[in-house]
Length: 122
Image (tube, rainbow, N blue to C red; front, side, top):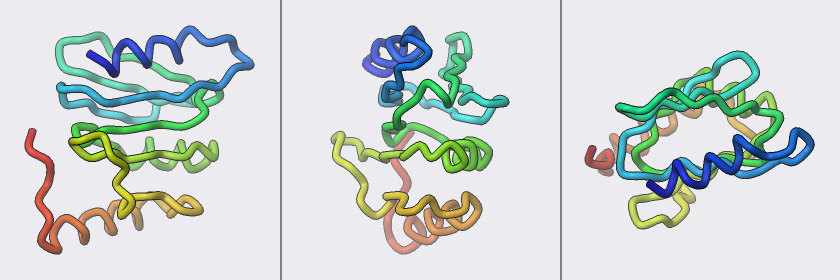
């Protein structure tokens, strides 16, 4: 899985080095906050913990489910999140500019998906 191979590099980076976290694979992925880190859960795999202080940005595919706590943690740390569609292209309509408050962001996402767009197939 692409996501696992790339994210492992972020976990082993030197403490002063910030690297991107890629969450893009075939399995549904859940992201939540766990103290000063993101907790990434992929079915049938051990949870992975990524310290926010070691991340430069997060690139997330369509099968990633975000908890509001994880969005808020990234916002607080100033980490940009790039959302990708199923073809690997950036979803410009989901771009976080000046880090919108997480609850407002989730509401905006719901409006986008209920305005005629369907959720990605899982």
